[in-house]
Length: 352
Image (tube, rainbow, N blue to C red; front, side, top):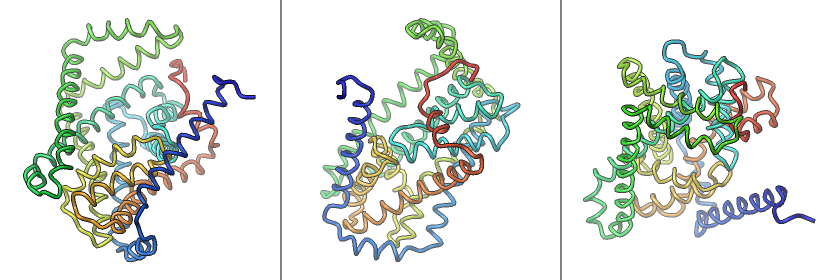
């Protein structure tokens, strides 16, 4: 008999919720579609544009590896291969599991193959997340401003675009708050560190050292602001990452003979990121429905075309990461249990 508070029951309920959400959003996505027509559209895919989309997604992994090495230590970065390995396997975990595993798995895998400390690497992951959040929000705000009149004046999209405009305002507020926070760390690091240390007292004693090292590692990355060359390289890598992550959608539309303006990828990428936040394996269902809503509401796609584009977009966005991650997984002779535990473990002592 299962106890109400037993870990096993919680896992069963969690799994049931994940299955329900996956099935529910897949139903919403595929409802009213003609699967035979969808298959015909997919079979008509231009293989060259499709292959270009796959390659451009893989290139994002290269840019991410270069950027992470610079953020970790621009003067003596860790070797490329172990950093690429940690990145690729970490993102593979986040793709196939219904959790954001990469944020913990990447620094854990890197720490086990280099001299980089886990808590230090974890702090740089937060820096990467902030850079990516800035990029995503700026692209979304740019798109909204650039198309404000076009979508607002069209009666077929005006009502729906009001939600997008509200999202752009919220994005601007988030950027402002985030900028104030970063400025506070940069100019008042001592005071913010004392506040962080005070909050760390609620943690068990054995985690407090890692907690502070995590904070110090994160704030140490702000040194890049005083090093123009290193900062320029990090920003260049970030631009390369987001060019790859956005342009892959554009290549999918070309492959399926449904071309859209290039900046439509800024819009679709921003909205599908919200869909990925739904806790389903690999974003299945939520990602697809979010993409479909944009295509049918703002670009007048029919249901079948929207299903085909969303499915192919998901393949292009996940296949290079999954295939590369699994190839490295096999090459390194890892067991699934080893990698999964790296993604699920709590911040350990610095001796990891």
